[in-house]
Length: 172
Image 1 (spheres, helix red, strand yellow):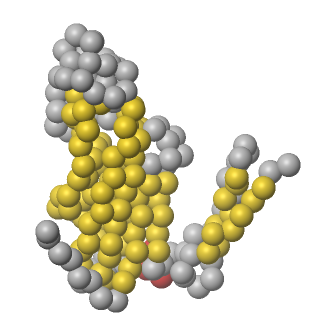
Image 2 (image 1 turned 90 degrees about the horizontal axis):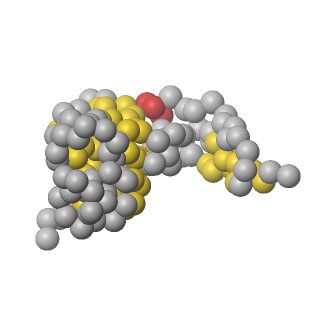
């Protein structure tokens, strides 16, 4: 028997049903982006990062309405080929909002760029304000061009956005 729990979204009482354990995920119709205060985009399958070094691959994206937003992401990156630095970043439109990097892959493979883990989770958070609707995306890339294999982002990567009324950011 499959257990199902409901997660409330802060938009007109809409809810999403999430399957716990084996089985399919069922969902009620999502609210339009312009009414949601909390948005979660989660990938349902893995995404291969471009084999060309320095080329961003979009992992998840949402369009958010005007307002003050805090966004965060979590992505598990896997690489069984030669190690390389993988970088993931939240973008608003084409603006890099800050990211995280990790050396991921086989350190003993030909062309490796150092000792790294085969799997690592990268995450970060950013805040922004916009007077118009804005496309927000989680994108990942790696430093060096590879012939085959290479890094991918495992399914379940998430891009989370929360709309607030006051936005205070601090650089420390």
